[in-house]
Every structure is written in structure tokens, then in C-alpha cells.
Length: 479
Image (cartoon, rainbow, N blue to C red; front, side):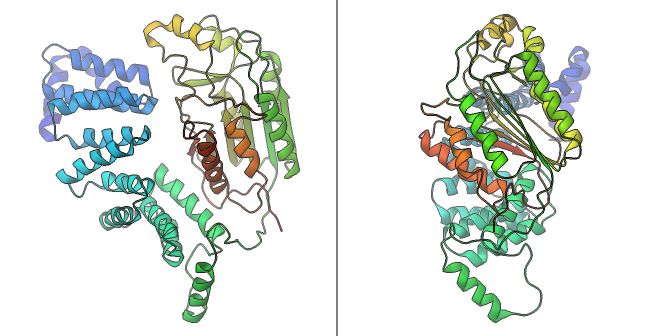
């Protein structure tokens, strides 16, 4: 590694015009700039294999972050043709294959990493997930146990191992591992998600978040026996006594597009979601159907004003959306998008809504059933030329502040189905579970995901980015 760093420093001293490219090449959240900078480094006169490997790996990361996994794999392969034992690139290939749901090739990549370095913890943890998805619980358990052996504070590994124990019917061990996940102080998105999921499962299983104090072996054994005797989906949490606070929602559904293909379901979806939120006690539900640019902006303004003092803000949008340069825009029904610059004048940027929410509410839920194929995106693609991501790449991944959950109807960069019935596959699943009482939203969304995968035969997989923290987020409390 020291040799590589020294070589890179020498290279940039010899090519001062590329000095800034070193930083830009590593900035994967700015896709266009990152790929361009990495490409300039790779193609620079006199570029040695160390420069090509370093820049090629970072370019692969940029494509992966954008959701273009085929291009990511192509770049990883280029790197590995030069440096066949570059572990980060082999591991990256495994992650890209996993995101493509090619579990066999993902496992082969992680196996290769671990044959070269049995203590490469990211590959161990990731292979555990692959084994779980392949139904090999014993190997999954072994991988998570090895991960924990290398990092005893790995909250995600404890939570994942608990899932295996649940699958095997060993609920006492599952409860123990969920508690260990919660006790971990590990930071990072996967560990935050593990904390939220572990709280949810403990609530479902009727167990406390921490182990009982004192010596109560008989009572503990009786509780464990009771838990084992109840199927996991039937194990009920005790009644939840919780003050749900002031909850405010904005629900938008745009179907009747004037300058592109209309959509069948968003207006139906939004009407049903708004009605459901009112039934579960949201104090303020601002809704809008088939809004032009002026009315859409007005609804966002009304929502911002209503958010003052809110404990929970909920935003649902169904309709056409468009991604430009890594940012997402919601399309009113009168948008034309004849040129790239029209995006900024004729649409509403998602981040603008998110800023209103994060500035005023304690907890924020954003649900986007807006990843449908958008013919108007072709106009933008023509205007952007080689810079275009194409019209069929759905929405870009969204990053948020602490206390926010963002849910996509499908993976970032993919296209969701509008559906052939009254509701889209995603919103049909959401409506099925939205009013379930005493359930953490993390568990609810897992059930929605299962329903959507089943309904679309695996073509659509709902996705989420979460920075929620603290207690479970329960939308409705039952008796």
C-alpha cells in the first residue's frame, strides 16, 4: 500500500493538471465528475498499472453507487486483469453481483476473497447474506459467527445471525443476538439498520430490549418455552403504550400527464394512502391529485407550514419522476421537459421537500412510488448527449440526515411497475400493511417488500435508505 501511495504521489507531481482528479476520482457521490476524473487518470500518458488499478477501482465504485452494476463489473474486471489478487476489486465484484441478484457469482467472488485472506471481514459478512438468501442456514451461521469473532462489536452480524436462529426455530438464541446487536456501539448505516431491525424483532417476539437482571432461571426458561411454542409470525408483542405525537402527511398522486404517457394508478394510490393515514390518526393529511406545477408547489408550501412542531412527517409521492445528475425531480402533469434546463423550471426537486421535513420534524418518512419509465426523459437525454444516464434508470439514491427513512418502490436506478389493477404493486403492498397496529415500520416495510417481490415475480424489489434511530417507529397503536 505504501508503494502504491508513493507511486501515486509521484504521478501527480509529474502531472499537476491531474492533481484535482485524485480527489474527484474518489468522490463517488458525484458520478459524472468521478468517472471523468478517473478516466483522465487512466488515460494519462505514462500511466502505470498502479495508477490504472487505483483509478479503475474508484471508477467501478462510482458506477456501482449509480446502480450501473454491469459497468461496475466491467471496470472491476479491467482492474483484476492487471492485478488479479486485488481484494477490494474482487470483493466489489461480489457486491455488484449480489445487487444484480446473481447469488452464484456473488458467492464465487466472496469465496475467492476469503481464499486469499480468510479474515477479510466484509467478504465474510456479505457471504453470510448470500448463504442466507440461498437457503444455506448452516453456512450463513458460520460466516456470521466468524465475522463476530473478528469484530465482536459488529451489530449487523449479530442481527443477521439472529435472523438465522429465527429461521432455525432457536428463538432464545435469536433474542440473545438481537440484544447484543442493540448493545453494540458500532456506527454506520448497516449497523443503524441492524439496531432498528433488532428492536422490531424483539418487539414482535415479546422480549425486552435488554436481558433480564437478576437470577430468574425458572421464569426465563418458561418464557423461552412459551416463545418456542409460538410460530414466529404469531408471536405477539404486549400492548404498546405509546404517544404517537403530532403526525403530518403530504400525499401526491399524478396520473393525468398532458405531454407524456398517462399513468393508471397514482391517483388511485394517493387517494387510498391519504384515507389510510386519516384512519390511523394523522392529525393533518394534505393531499393532491393530478397537480400542475403551480398547484404542486402550493401543496409543498402548505405542507411546510403544517410541519411546525410535528413529531413525524410523512411524504408519499406517486407519479412520474426524473433523475438528472444524481438528483430526483417530481413531475407535475403539465411538464414538457423539452430540454434539460426545463427540469429546473417545470418540476419540484425531491430534496426541497426533504429539507422542509428535516428542518421541522423529529422523524421523517418519505415513500416514492415514482420510479416508472418516463418517456420525457428521452428529451433530456438528447439534450445531455453523452452525459445522459438514459430514460430507463428510474430515480437516484437519496441520502438524508439522521431521523429520516426514504423508501423507493424499487431499487435506485431501476424502473417500477405501474400495475394492471387498481393500485401499483408497491402501493398495494403498502396499503395491505400500513394500518397494522403495534408494528415497527422496519418490519412493515419488510412485509411490503415480500409482497411486491411475490407479486412481480422478482422483477421489482423495494429499496430503502434509513437513518432512523431510537425507539421503533409505530404508525398506529392498537389495543
